[in-house]
Image 1 (cartoon, rainbow, N blue to C red):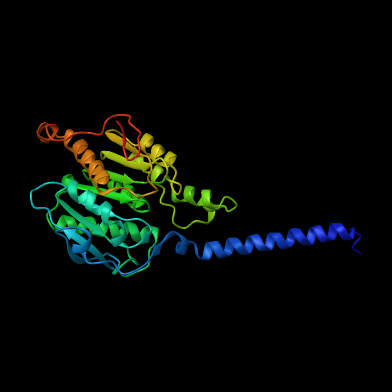
Image 2 (spheres, helix red, strand yellow; image 1 turned 60 degrees about the vertical axis):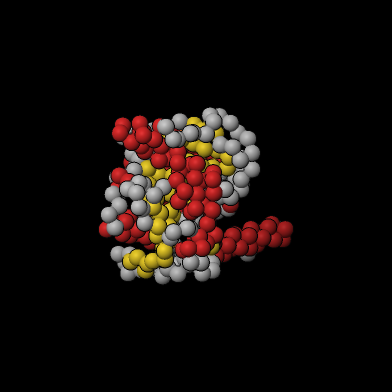
Length: 304
């Protein structure tokens, strides 16, 4: 016979109801987590509408997907950038960023992730790594040498950008608004959820930097409310030299101007060339780095 006080029984029932609701919420979040991480939308515009001199193309992946891309072939034997975009929308939403990179290098391949734009497939962490590998393999077949390839990651794409130099001896890496781990972002947004345990796609960049030897430039906004500046700084601190950190004020997440990204990409090219004596002497006369330690609206801090 149950001798519990009626009030005590009500509290027990309430606790059970709350627990059931919490478990149901966890199940729902677990089931649709990839819809929260990967948010493709719309059909990407023509390459010529996003980047001057670019053409539309497709490239295959090892697992049978077909990826949309914009391709601006190098003409002067300079550096080529592989652009890896963020989690929302399509390539057309980051025209200013792609154009900024294009202004600083000779060639650009802007890749649309599987499931985004006109690309086939469904995005996952491993799937995006396969997309990055497919893009680098395609560039190699076009005659782009690894020592003239820089990888540019934007937001979500920084997780793939960090993975690539653990597999390929690329020339350099530019990270725009990077995170330490995707689970760190999830834990900030859902503090009541055991994110590390439940999250399928972790993109643990901070754990891979000891395997990366490529020169690095990190770009972050001091006013980024989605990915805290502290994460960009943590990646910068964990990375090997040579490296630079550019911090901007009055910018929300990846809302950078074309000329700001061109400056950051130019800083990376300068770092890469500095490791090559013949190129460094030629580059020194034309490269003007940002003024050190200035933090003003739309002005970067330049740290080495």
